[in-house]
Each structure stands twice: as C-alpha cells, then as structure tokens.
Amino acid sequence: MKNRARNLLTDRSYRKLLDSLYEGVYLVDSERTIVYWNDAAEQMTGYKSGEVVGKHCWDGLLMHVDSRGTSLCTNRCLLHEAMELKKSVEGKVFFHHRDGHEVPVTVRTTPILGDRGRVLGAAQIFSDNSSTEDLGRKVRELERMALLDPLTKLGNRRYGQMNLSGKLREFKRYGWPFGVLFIDIDKFKAVNDTYGHDAGDRVLRLVAATIRNGLRSSDVVVRWGGEEFVAIVASVDEEKLRHVGEKLRVLVERSSISLEKETKSITISIGATLARKRDSSASLIKRADTLMYQSKKEGRNRLSI
Image (cartoon, rainbow, N blue to C red; front, top):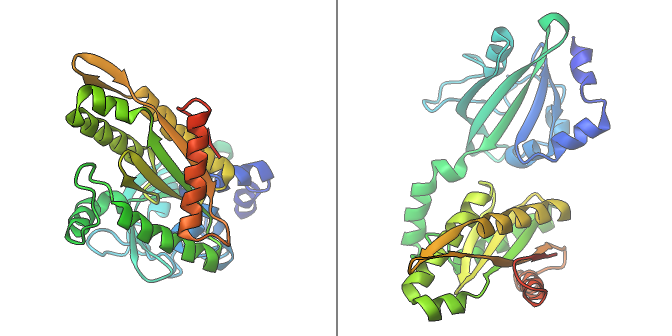
C-alpha cells in the first residue's frame, strides 16, 4: 500500500498540478509517513520537502494543536480520523512554523482509497487563516501605528513600503519570489467631478474591498495614494501573477455602484512585475507604475506585465 500511495506522484503532470496550488498539500501513506510535500507547504511552514518526506506526521515537525493547545498528533489526529472513517474531515488548527511561531490554518483531510475501498493513505490540504484570525487585531494595531488608511481600512503607503522592503529582503536572502500589482481606477477624476467626492469615496471603498477579497491571506494590498493601490503577491511566477491580476481586473469590472440613480461600472488598469535581484523598493514600484500607464495608453481596463 505504501508503494501505491507513492506511485500516485510518479506522474509529472500530477506533481506539477499540486505544486501550482496556493494551498499547502502533503500526502501520507497508510502508516502516516509523509510521501509528498508541495511548494506552498514549504512556503507556509518553513520546512523544505527534503526535511519532511520520509518522516511520520507525528515526528515533532508541525505539532498540530487545537485552539486549547491540545496536541492533535497524539490525540484525535485528522489524518488517522479520515483514513479510519474513509471520508473527508475538516478542522481549524495551529501548526508550528520552522521559525517557532504558531500559524492558524484550516485543514481539509481526505482519504486516498484504492480497489474495494482499501485505504492507501491520505491527502491533507491547508490554507493560512492568519488574515481572518488576526483581522481585528491587525486593524487596531495599524490604527495605533498610523499605518491604516481610514477611508478604505487598508494599510496605507507607509505600511506598503514596510511590507515591500521586507519582501525584498526575503527574496534576496532566501529566493522567495513575489510580484507587485500597481492598480489605478480608470476615469476616477470624472467620477469626482461629476458626482462629487462622497461618490468618489464610495468607489474607493468598493474597489478596495473587491481587491482585498480577491487576494489570498498571504498577499498584501494597500492604498498607495489617491485612486492608486499596490498589491504585493507572494509565491508567484509570471503566469501566476498575470492570473491574479486578471482575476482582480475582472472582479472589479463585474462590480457596479449606484450614483444618482445611475448604475456605473468601474474598471481598473494594472501594471504587474516580478521582483528582481537588483531591485530596490523604488525601482520595483517604478516599473509596475510604468506598466500601469502602458495599460492606460492601450485603452484602460487591462493588465500589462
């Protein structure tokens, strides 16, 4: 059974699919030996595949605990439960990051079944809950530190610059890739001039909420100034960054707002770029800004990368 679980990953296209997911994924055999650990799992836990593959899930790496601090590795293990019940189970837990801090995650565990319902192992998929678990605390902390934009409730430019500097340091030290989306609301001045500043504020809040809800918990979006926003998107290559940017563009395009009994559609223009080894925060933002203006020149409501 162990070999059959491992054989699930011999197909290169299957491995590529799992490595492209934003969620962390790992597979275990019937004895709960880890046989696969995807790229997102490495990013979210700090543990490289080579450090965990071949070890048991209870070997003191992730040390899953519930909200009361009770160990789930020796008591009510979700992997064991899924394989025993032969059905998917879900829960909110905390795991231990390699750096030492606890990370809140939603875990979905599914048994891998073979012929005649034979249990071959299980797959565990986990997503970071940090943004939802800590949202209230983060807002209060940002307000205290004057890092919050009061209108949109996003971080402000100063907060964005701090995050960007941190991401660049990580990229240059560890090689963790990320990209930047520079976003500008199309024809925003016309909205202010025609309908007034209150209407403009409503548009800003709508776009801010749409972008925030369209990003992952590991990403950051800030109001850069005026009608401009910057999104810092973690763990992406050019294709994934384009996908994220296009998703945001379409989400905004599909939204609408009522202004003086008129329903108005809103669009955005986006410049997207990946971080480079020689980048500074200024050069990265400048390149994304230039690409955003390229989108404007080409007709607005588009992405340039």
